[in-house]
Length: 151
Image 1 (tube, rainbow, N blue to C red):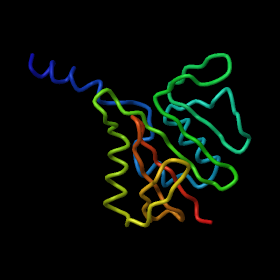
Image 2 (image 1 turned 90 degrees about the horizontal axis):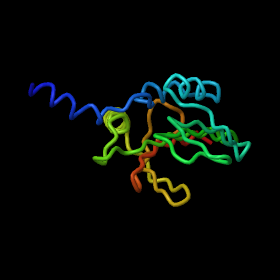
Image 3 (image 1 turned 90 degrees about the vertical axis):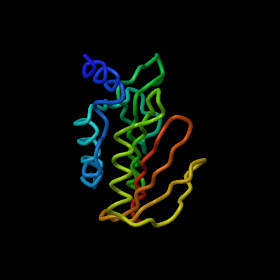
Image 4 (image 1 turned 30 degrees about the horizontal axis):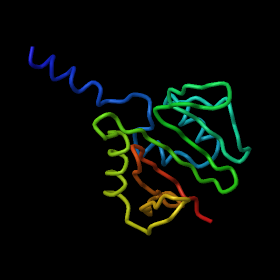
């Protein structure tokens, strides 16, 4: 009985369908690969693409007549510069296991590069096998992984 109670307590901590490994991110080298990884991990393309230079995917989205109103996660590909971003939503305990696992892998396997600002976020970036830099930041219940393509 104790094991069942413990199992039921931890089920909400596990989130299914998000990008969940550094290996997934390493596979993204084009818009086509970005779409493949997003689709394979349960994201669906936004019905409302506001900017032709940004391809948007959402995890378990809710829509109204004009936009996405809620989602468990998001993925964006920036066509002009080949950057991409994954957004992870924290659970009610303030954690996201997939994000934490990816970040831990990157900190272990890569070296810190620099702090790179994007709008109101400052990303701690790491040099890895990828040609660009991977950046990580947490803000207001969301965790972001942004790939800065080499320019």
